[in-house]
Length: 133
Image (cartoon, rainbow, N blue to C red; front, side):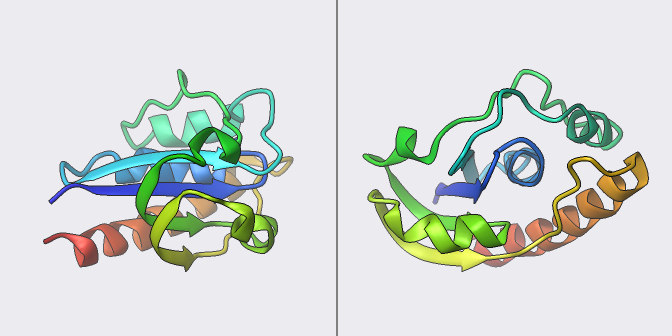
């Protein structure tokens, strides 16, 4: 059974984009991402480190959480503190809310992006396997 997942963050430029990229590798998951205060573009560091894992997020664009307010999701996953605090304003239908917090790599060196990418990959891979029917 297909699981619909929305990953939330503040800017929707790094962490949530990476999580969306990893989740969409699974045939049983339809993942989206959004932000409470979306950035103008996906962070080039996030694009670079995801490409190193064979996942191209270069055509993605940050979206506002309100774009999804009329949709139904099995899971809404927040990946940063601000999104967790503002997530209750999400008015769409949600079966489960989950928080997996990560430090923001924006403005940091590429090694820090890789560290956050690897943490997200590990956690979201485990999560994807757990929710498979």
